[in-house]
Image (spheres, rainbow, N blue to C red):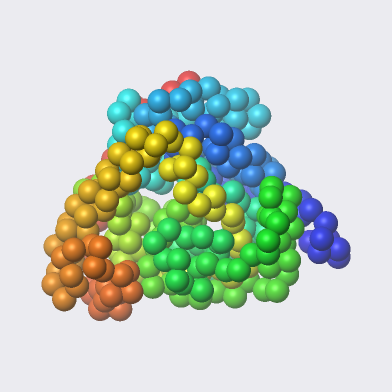
Length: 312
């Protein structure tokens, strides 16, 4: 890093076989452009890029092909119908061949020190999952471990990258995380091979929580890296929609969260936690008890190939 902390940090150069970055999109080309611009400004070299279009109404594939022209180590997948978050993430995890795979939601803008912080954490073979900090993390707005204060006036990538560099200069302390919130995270390839990926029966939501539980049961740590900052454009994938479509999406989200919670609750025998998700806080889930359970082969997600969805 430059001696001048206010200089724009340079992209992190990655060698072949080390890192795959994956982005999944269901609409919202404008915010996806910013996500990809942040990736190409933050990481360079022989990293792999996997882009998944989850049946967008907009021409997301056209954007992805432009990205591939810029970075030839790019693969594009497209679902003909909306398969939701767990399949989108699995497509990336199961299709990657590098040591580390990092998933990034299209409304998350990474920085060079975000990449540097996660890769530094993953140098420890005991760590299976690493995520960074942000200005906003879905579902845990009251967690100071995940959400940090940011100064007013951050308006674009350069502001974000400079702030992230100042944050990283203070250190990259690692804290064990109770749960995985999967808007942006890095996972070791060996973890994917052992667990088989996300549980796609948890449609849209809470499959990240389940994956984090199984990762700990299988013996790996999951950590938050204090020096790895990425900006989350809060509600960007809601606000851009017309009013009626926005209302329907919010209602659909509520229904899918409720259904996923019922499945997760039954899967792990969470009888002491309210059946109604709206009455539940993540911190009421007994993570310590669940993670202390002996790992069972029946909890390995069946391997699924997404090769049929790859397009030229």
